[in-house]
Image (cartoon, rainbow, N blue to C red):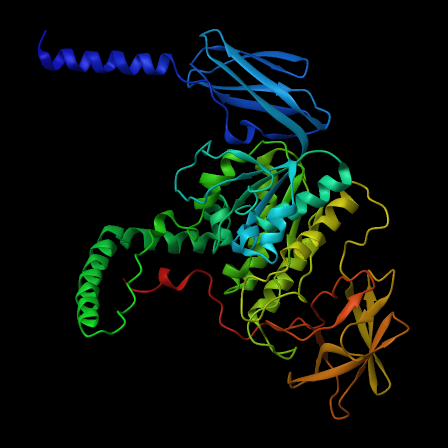
Length: 528
């Protein structure tokens, strides 16, 4: 036998041995310290040696399954009561053994972009919270951001308890949401934090959906054209040239005793980034499909404010597609409406963030959805408002009232139901105001604007009538055709329900936005 043939045969034998003794393992969501959705039948899945028989024991349950030819297996499990820790024990007829503790409780996916990813360490009173909070039965699975064109079935991350010294890098909204549920329900709560700062909604969606749906096909086509001409290696080569030039300028500045220029930032590989359609879905959502959950909380939209009209189609399509693929029916899906940002502006004139908020609100037409209105707690100078705890409270109101049947909890923000002329005034009617309305900081109501046939907007003040309606002071020379409330990137507003929920931004007109539509990021249509 030739040496070359011998080494090929030897390599095949080694490879066969590796496959024959494949490691018994579980996806991260079922790993050590996991929280499993209570009181629901669920499926455990994992990998083992092809053909191996796996024995599974958990809280008196005993079941058996067999790994497929690809080494994948799945087993149906009976519901668990909230509590723990339970011992999950798996053993194969090949001698592999796996045992670790798990809990049963409420499992929620926390998803979106940077405001959902924002950590406790970067939030208000972080030092105090790290010192006093200790919740061993709140457990967080932080899924590291990563994008790919290829679909995967697992990610390599671990559950951690929300205990002292362990909180800092956890999602602030995710933790606070879990904290409220845990204190109300008295059961463990698990948060699967799969969020990525700056991500576009297209990256969270299956690219096949975008490619086949006529409403979104152009997105896929533009990306495919860009992918054919995009050369990351050439980008890196040009970057190396910029670095060399920067080093010369830096050295010269240092010799003169001057501050050196800023180092050029390395380019990001857009093929693995958080804008490319399907990238996050493939790598981070796909592995979770089928995992039993209580619901999803979502904070995203800033990266899609370039085209709110498109977002109005994408957002409900994404929710519907996730629900279809998850196989758990219409699970709850609650989101944060974009808060105020940029310079303070009068209501009325077109603003892309106002239309994006409207797109989010219209998605309430889907069943088992809810919206946390946060127009009052933004930061004009920072796209990341500090009040993450209040955001979580407003999300938790929806979950407690709808999913856990908490009585007497207000959850839906007040909304405007319509308007009508009232002599020299305009009267505004409201819904979701069982406890009435109130103003803060000022006696007059701020945030309204009116327009006539010329579509020129006039900021107007209002007065609260009997805590139920608002009467607007209208300019005498304006014949009102439209009314808007909180219709700006960062409007001045001060109208609340008595429970402290702000009135939802609203408009009576259906006039098209005058700003430019931008379906995709500009780099897709720029010449290389």
